[in-house]
Length: 425
Image (cartoon, rainbow, N blue to C red; front, side, top):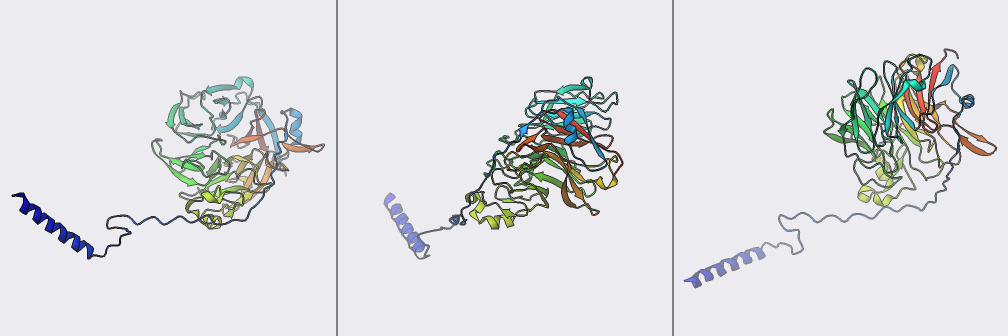
């Protein structure tokens, strides 16, 4: 009984194969339902060989002594004083409306609270106290709704602020941030849109990042449970903030090391959502970096083509000056033309023949609230003496004090400086 069934099946299969043969399906594919084979990736675009001449030059570090104040230069009508010294690795500042100041110390992994209670213009020994500890590589800080937020190696913490400046036990607001690599300093600020922004530096000098959150600015939800990459291709934009009038987000980015004395420059960028800012292949206004390895460019397009698709800088500053913090001036103690300008802390170079940075610089915004120039504001920390470069300050944090004066830190000698306008010209 099975033979007729088998014979019928054989006839049916023969008919099917005969019909299939008449459809002329190519033997090499793609077959129906299968994806098209991927197009072979192009070879990297050829580039002429280049040789870099780089200099390692670290000015001799000197400790702070009061007599060195005379070396500092400020515009006419301003004075510089010392509010505190011997504070260790004094990095970022968060000023409060009542005159209290929070200070992060990255190497000590802690936060201090300082307040000039006796109004003598100094943070005396009895006016300083540790208010948080065991915060790995803590750096940037910001305040919102009576809480202090701080960013460190892998976490962003939140702490309740008491009336006397005391902080509650830190709670983790967000975690699993990328490894720090050689760029441990990070900034964190609340934006006018109610979201928290955090800067994440690259883990290396000029190689493509392995983690998609490296070399970026992140945007976090108000509860810390969700985040996105807001902008990428930023090697190390620690200092950033919103211009008070336009609410435009600006950031100062550090260029790569070991590419010579003058490239890449430090960049002032408008930070916009979804934009790519070029690092490690481009610098400044979409300029291809001749020393970057083009073989890792996404898509293996030419370096010029890639750079043309990125966001260029608005202003450039001296290479390797190492921008490390930025704040907008919103006080009334300085002359009116300074209001809504930005101040940048340039920590100082170590791989440039003639040192750059070691200063506080001013970003001047014009009447239309657009940045037009970057010029030194407090300088003189680095100098040449008998043919040898020396320095007595690595500036780090910068903030507007509650009375409108400007505070900035030196993380080398643990000094907090104060700049005030005297009203003269």
